[in-house]
Image 1 (cartoon, rainbow, N blue to C red):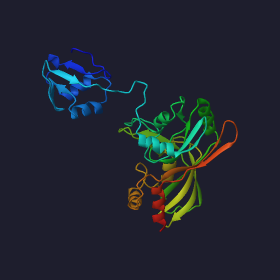
Image 2: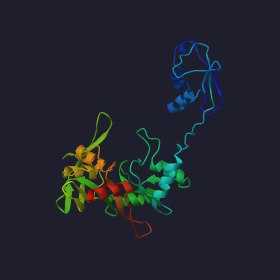
Image 3: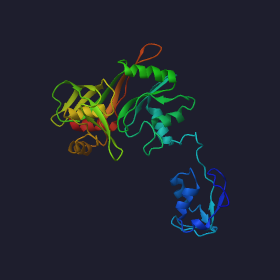
Image 4: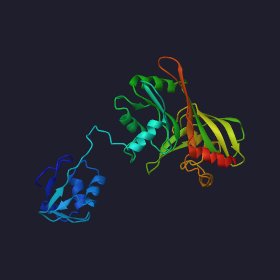
Length: 317
C-alpha cells in the first residue's frame, strides 16, 4: 500500500497488494477507509467517482495485484461534529416549540420522530435541537416519549434546570396527561389501573413490557373523554409512576388496547382505525403542569395533529 487512507484528504491513490487480489472493490474500500460510512462508499462507487487504473468500475469489480485505486476527496463530520439534520426537520421542530426560556424548551413532538439517535437512527429531537440552539451547550432530554407518541416533550438547556425537573419528576410536582384512543366502550367514567410492570428484552433486541408480579409498581389513572359507541373510546391517561410503555400496557391490561399500537395493540381494531385514515399510534401527551425553579408553575397544552382530528371526526360521523 503506497498511502495511509485519510477520510478528509484530497485525492487518494491506493495500490493493491498481492494478498488482496481477488477482493471486491467495495469490500476493499470498506476495510481501507476507516470511519467512512458504507453509504458514502457505495455512493462514490455508484457515481463512478472511484477509478481503477484510471478507468471506471462497477461495485462488484474484483481487484488485481498492482491495481491503482483512485479515491476522490471525502468530507466527513469531525469526531465531535453533529450529523447534519435535514433542514425540513429542523424547521418542523422549530415550529413545534410551544415554550422556551433561558433554561427550558418544551415542544409538541410530532409522531414518528425519535427523541434521540440510536438503533439505526443517526439523530432524533435532541440532536436536532442541539443544532437549532448551538449556544446551549448543556442541552439534555428531561424525559422521553416513544417514537410514535406525539406531544409535550421537555428539553433542559441548563444542568440546573435538568436537576430541578428530575427532582420534580421523582416527586409529585409534575402532572403529565395523555389522550389515547382505545378499543371498545370504556364503561367506567374513571378507572385506576395499578399493575406492576416488568421489562423484557426479546432475542431480536426488541424491548417489551408486561404486567408481572415481579415487576415495578405502576399506577395510571384513566378518565373517559368521549365514547364512540361500542367501537372506541377517547380517554385521558395520567401516569402517576413513569414506567416504560406504562400507558400502553395498562390500557391493554384494562381490556382496551390503544389504536395503532404495533406492540401491545389489537390488529383488527388498528386496521379498522387505519381504514378511517388513522395511520399512527393514538397516544398524545397533551397537558403538562411543571414547577419552575424561580417559583410559579408552567402549564401547557399541545393540540393533536390534523390526522388525529380527522380520524375522530370520521368516528363521530
